[in-house]
Image (cartoon, rainbow, N blue to C red; front, side, top):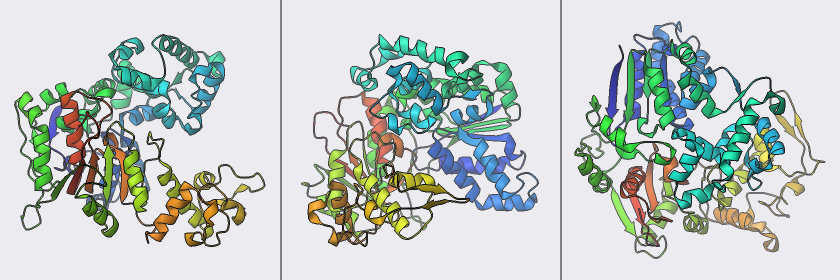
Length: 545
């Protein structure tokens, strides 16, 4: 008999921390191999693993058991790596079958050129990125996440959404047929077995009871974080996983359901979590003014579903409520509060997230570049205008090279991806040895000739500059340390979910109008990342969060 325990709580109330405590409580009665933790993203799974392993309890636990269960620390890490994962990773590691490889994609492109997205094909250096970025595979993944065939999913999209995929409704059935034929035809795919992609593995796990029974027979405790983000197929998989467990813990917040496009269902989750077994109320992140602002955003949704949450603002150790600050700005540069924002960016050590929804954040990037601030932008961000982050990354690696540091092959190749053949990268036992010419290196697009010390951009020849070099020069002249810990981030709202920052700078501009509750949830997630100050920027058109 399975005992199901639902854990609900607004942002920053410690849901993930609660699950880590549950994990350790479960260790009193179960072996680590019997406990599986499922999270929505790889980043979140990594975060939970680090919290589990860094917790003092694990040291005490291993000491008390004399390593009999976990074995060595190395064994402990391997167990956590295998059992604290996303649902796709769980199925990939356990469902037998030959998984889809990047080489298969290359063969598929040679057979059917419409699969070759020439504009960004160079970015597909591993299977995970391929399925995340390629328009067809993205479309296929979302359709199957929603439990729909291609045609039905296509019909459910808006005109704006259809444009993103670059395909017509007439193309999709043929591409689907060719793709499935390629996976199953051993003569053309060059493999001895049927090829399984990520979704195939999850679907096989769900639909084949013999497979799922074999995979799940040892699971005694199932812990699910961010349950509200589960797609149709993910919910089905978790239901299969939980059917024979002793305890099924699932934590989430219906007000943070922002992955509807990927099959999340806020309506059903609101109903399921209306009366959770455990409700977390103490806020450990948002100060009072941010807490109240977020409550006003989400109140119409609470009224609609006829419930409310107790959500207390953050307090100091002596019980004093932290007030925080809220600035509603008309623009980044012309608003009366703009100088205050600039001052805090330049003269504090606080971190900042510049976040947005559905629009290229060009103005945000231009603003930070003009300030001469290092910016951290995710490598897989769907942005055309992300040279600042790339320039900094290459500059940092270049500094390492000048210092004689050993770098991984991937880092060296990112710097020297278009190197002249005479400059070679040779494998050694532990790392790579690099043979290079300094003068050639500084002629790369991020650097210019005539530089003896790369940190001294005062000597760069003005007539040979580039936007990347100018940006780096501005940072150096601004006395910013290019190798300091990142503290200025730029990401969209979906990728900052689960994270926390001192300052949130939110652009309220939308490219098109969206359903009211969806907008409220999106804004709620973004604003509730702030632990000190929330800055909102008024929409520049008629569409606003």
